[in-house]
Amino acid sequence: MVEANIPPWVWYLVAAGRLSPSADNSQPWRFVFDGQRLSVEFDETRGGQLGRTHPAVLLAFGALLENLVQAARAAKIDTSRWEFSSLADTGCLVRIPVPDQPLAQSELPAVICARHTNRGPFERLPLPKETVSALTTQREGCAFVQAFAEQEAISQLAQLVRLASELRFQTEEIHRWLAGSLRFTEEEAARGDGLDVATLALPPGGKWLSRFLSKWERMAALNRLGAYKLLARIEAAQFTQAGAAVALVSKDVGDDAWLEAGRLLERIWLTLTEHKIAAHPYFVLSDQLWRLRTGEIPPNLQPTAERLAQKARALFAERMPLMLLRVGRARQPAKRSQRLPTASLLVTKARAQHSKEQLCTRSNSPC
Image (cartoon, rainbow, N blue to C red; front, side):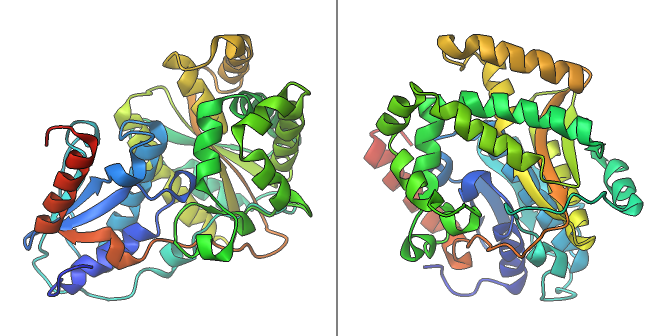
């Protein structure tokens, strides 16, 4: 429960942040209001398994920041006085002071509310030229956009997705994270976090198979029979079902680069939404390349990871792909993921400190 007397501008910005994309809908953030400033912080209880320097977390916070900025501009909130800090060092992304003027509007921009993931099939139609131009002219810091329209190039990207997915389906850590995020029933999905399997556009029997394979021991046993290859081929085949593909790339791979890519991701996603183009993000390639760089690939999977990196370097001209999206005209509307209630994301400073002390007590660590 949140204390009373929270001003409208706080609720407005929290509502904008709430609609941001995140890894498996984990929503690893919280908003803290101290009466004078609204802070956007990393929530250890929601993102602790990945950690606040994980690329997926940084991408999510970058996307959240873009939502906040766009919503603020729409409501005539001055962003020049916002105070930014290092998420890696402080766990806080931005501190927003009380605006000088009342809100110019109370409704969020329609495009922010409309943006969502569509994992269903797309039409294999080329993107309109004006859409391609609107995407490829955008950049944020060192991150910029590459669009792939030719089927040969999309097929090459699909091969990278297949190799990266083979690695993912053989990695216990990733499998357990994904399995823990799946929501199989309406009651589970109603919590507002995680991946509602109803949004995954699974074929008949897919829900049962997903539940069965959610146990790593079963997945590991079937992998000895080549299950990871079959599942990776299915995922790669889906990637080819698109009118185009979009990659966010950068020569930099530091924390700032991932945050910049997150802002750019949300911006181009909103652009696609305005143009009535569906999008389905694929992080698996970026994740595996990052794991290779940081030495987190299991030794038995190292040769496959090296082969993946070699192919990626050739396709992206030595730049790092920070996110892929397959994009196109959706054949049917998608079921949208639910979000955590707005009130559950916002706390006052006093309540935030109390929660931190409870977390420290449970973990027997100093506060």
